[in-house]
Length: 124
Image (cartoon, rainbow, N blue to C red; front, side, top):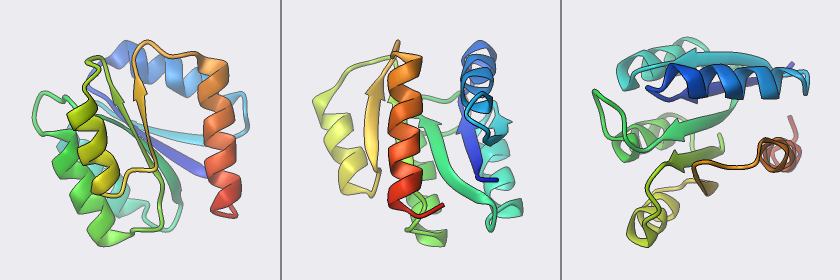
């Protein structure tokens, strides 16, 4: 079973994403801080097949987390999430290796489809 790591300091968003993605048969790991997310990623490096990462976290910048994730495993797709639509942040995220960029709020059905496509492309 593919594991998806969600890193978002909004507990409600983590819960909603977890419930939505569990219905697709995925194992979900959630972290409400950047440090917790990086620790979960490191501890589950062999199992995590996709990361949903908020750009704006209370303790760290999501783009810095993206950089650390890419250094450990550039093959894991990372979808960047943000509540603030900014073309410069989107371009920076893509340039740093993100597989995509989502502006909140987003459609959960569309997210599940994007997740499925990314996991299929990465043969999970």
